[in-house]
Length: 217
Image (cartoon, rainbow, N blue to C red; front, side, top):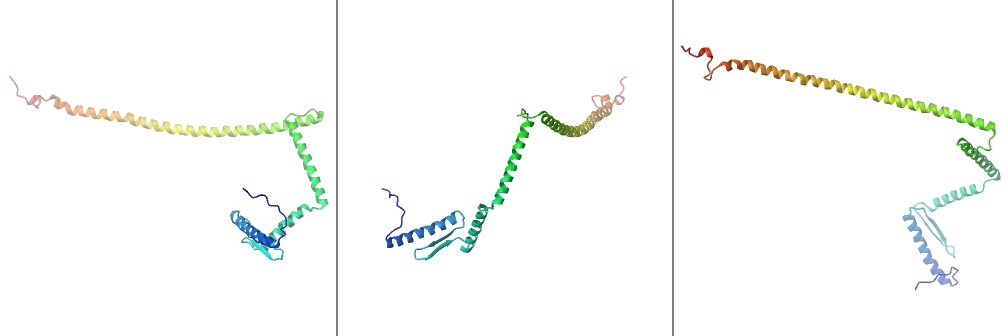
């Protein structure tokens, strides 16, 4: 069976109050140490007993440094909160000015998109038309520049490919000439072999030339 919720109120019994203080103080110091290690946090803890005895805990930084840091942060927050009325009025004026400027820009953007034109007068419509024509000129100029740059880049690529094609054609022609000269040499060699073999062809089966055979009368 779980323990019921303990009602938080001052313990009247002096001994029980002292025992509870000792236990809770030790637990509080332990929790402060654990959170400083687990979360890498700077922790400063100060506890005074009813008799005025001091119990404190601080991380690696000294207690004085942590208190000075706390004082700086606390003073900075107070300075932000306690702004003088003149500064507040100046900020309100600046906020109103920036808000009106944002609304004007949003309205102008809608007009440029062709929206909410019913409230514009003839002069305002003419000014809007002129703005659009000027913007259109800049857009066309930029578009043409991008196109010219793209064409120039393509022409450079075409020239590079033509140069590569010319080199390949030249190399192919040289290889063709080399292959055409190779069979000619073989034909010459075959003809020379035929000339050398003609005398042997005239020899008889006994290996003698006709004039070496005895004349038969």
